[in-house]
Amino acid sequence: MAELTHDWDPEEREAFCSLLTRFNSALSARMAVPGVPGPETQPES
Image (cartoon, rainbow, N blue to C red; front, side, top):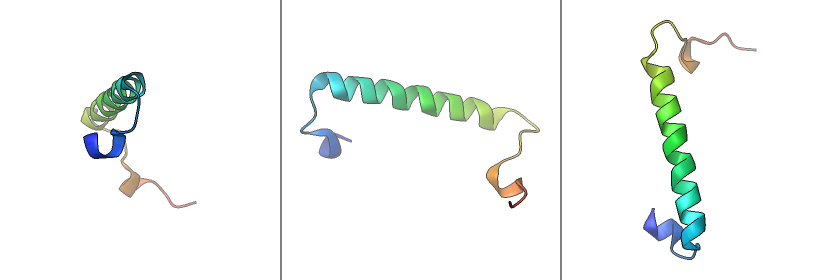
């Protein structure tokens, strides 16, 4: 991550990391719920 954000301001890096952490937490929580279909079980449109 440091290689990709080396030219970012510290505030930008902190905001990005905070949002990424929230996203990963929400995704993990969703994946842990039984009965929620994953993308491989969704019908094709």
